[in-house]
Image 1: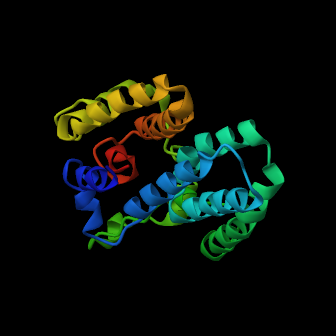
Image 2 (image 1 turned 120 degrees about the vertical axis):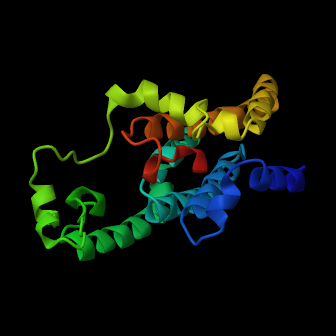
Length: 222
């Protein structure tokens, strides 16, 4: 079952396209799956909580949106077992590394590189837009999230013939059916809640982006 699932993931979704280059997408997916696997044991240990904290920190280090993907999994563990201090032991060193990276890039431990704007540098020097000018623009938002475009973006990401997950990867419908079956079984219902929570967080996050055709809003990659 595990081997078949892996082959379906590679060849029946768009994941293969993201595996052809060295990007953070497949590694982020791996971290999410490992975190789900870590959250499933009924009996928690110090080592389990330490690893989950490290996975959360590593996920954030790989790609900032992983904060939202991993949050439902982490909250489930905290709510079920309440071991915040053990999670922090694994999380804090990686957050410190991430803060150090931010400081080298932006001059602040807490300021994200995505918030300083981008440079557009065409051959025509008259059209150069500097980072400073973009950063001071009143039109620039700190985060590219907008509820006004969510309905349209959900259509693009889920069912459109442009990049819709259900259009290009209809095998996901079988996965949703599997989640219903898993949820109806008492001994496996927790796994369904964790998986659907992570998936819902990803879909909601990427549907808030004003550019559902490309860039970081290409939610179907996960």
